Image (cartoon, rainbow, N blue to C red; front, side):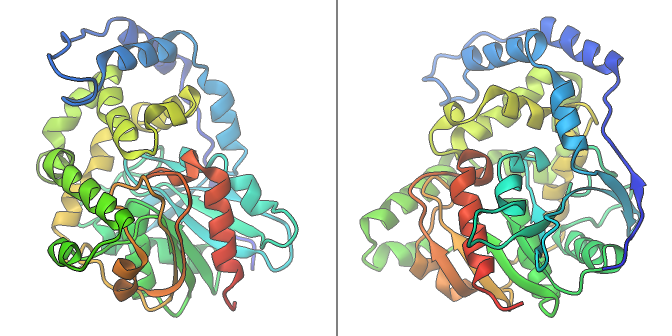
Length: 379
């Protein structure tokens, strides 16, 4: 691969911005707790207040900023938007180029613990050259200045990044959440260049009534209960972000406590074990990707744009080998027989634990599954 030089883009949050963050957290105007069980009516105020205290008084952003900057971040203009791209090279011959994509309310920070086992694996596993872009509008990268940046346009942009900008003829794709939606679309549109597609959030058509009638197993019944609970109380956030993101995100851009409440409630609800499975510093580093660059609004626009991109959100079947890691705590839990009609399934596992943020919750299980899948494919 020919060397390509792009503009170095290390992160540096000004000291004044960090001091402003601390002051805002110290001045937070808290509501009274509602008469409901913890987390039932939204964020648990006691948990939120303690994490905001840690954010203001104990959390040190600089070491995390330095760790991220060690991933050789660059800005690469594609289709009018500068993609902020983090990279980790294995240096090994035959390493597999892998586009690793995040979603909302996550960030590249989710991949902290899977980089080393993928880049420098144990004997018997393949090595990867990782390309980890922030999605347009997310984090410290470029923010689209025009409409139309739904899953289809993002998929084309990421393909251009991997082929025309970075020079890969073939590459793998992996991701969950929006990384699953964009990755599936990319694999469908550019199957000739995609080695394989791995996801921990397989996208299925909504045929749950037939699933109930088809003698579900105990695991499938639990998954259906989780789907139904999510429909009843857990999807309003997506409708708001898909219709009125500007109104919603004014408060999140002005108040770090408000931003934390909106994001942390999802980490609690969508993980396998709640906030307790995460380290506070990882939760706060992820929040910094939304707070410091003021990207709460621009990142929420992916929901708005997806609503206007019917083909991109139609969950088309990618004609490439697909690997699925069905973590039990995923918000849309699945079974193999539900997945098989939707993908060219070459690999399916049911890890014993983990949820929506699998790479951060269970990095060893996630990295091993990615390696097993891509290691089984011809290149």
